[in-house]
Length: 143
Image (cartoon, rainbow, N blue to C red; front, side):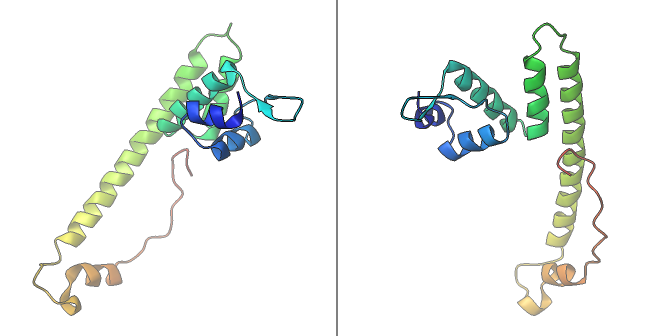
């Protein structure tokens, strides 16, 4: 199948397929005599796997690690479990960060009544007077 067909079956764009090839997540396909890419069901399966991992917010590094483990079928799945446990821990950290963000936004929202003028808007005053904390390094896999 051609790249457009693979993209259609994989529910992504041609650019995404090319990007995954460039990143080494998808193996380069064979070429036809006319130099067109020729994909197989193996590419479809791998693309589906990659898309499912991305839907779970996994990084390319995590996906690459899982693909490496898949390519060792005789190994046990301990590495897969470890990777998923680490990913779950990262998600927990992000949930805590998002909860804190929601609290800050809610506190700001409570500072303003709908009948105030812009000059008296508590939200705008709060945003203007907030002390920004030094940017701290994130503890998640996203950096």
